[in-house]
Length: 170
Image (tube, rainbow, N blue to C red; front, side):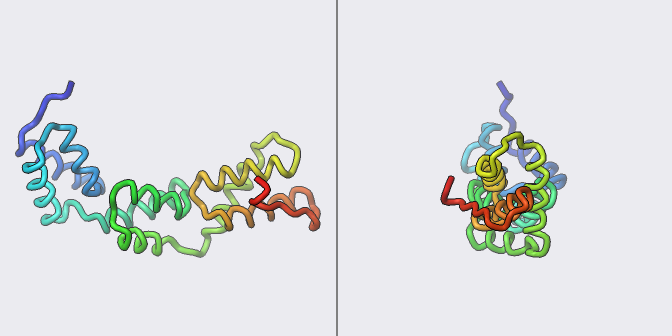
């Protein structure tokens, strides 16, 4: 069991933590709750952190979207979902998602799916396509984009132009 900390200790700990990494307001409130800080004191600490610009949801959302896209190769859908779960307002989420460049977005998905294709043991194009679609969707890419990219990969694999693979078949 964790020892409860005082208002001043919590405030200084969060200032230090927010100086090291980006946190959103929800993350700060969760930590305060874990530390046993009451709602009134917690609100004062959060207000202080926002006024002193230690916590800024817009800045957090921009960095989060950029890092998750570039480092973890998440798609826009998954990033949006995660930001919503952290109670970031919709206009801020839209602004952060808009900063993900369209150039290279599809290529990044295709690169991931081609790499994943090499590890799939299934032999039938339908099975391969289904696994690739599940993988692409789990990474948070848009379903139409995933479907089109998988079709392209399957056609290249089979070297046929008459094979049709539809997301609706799964």
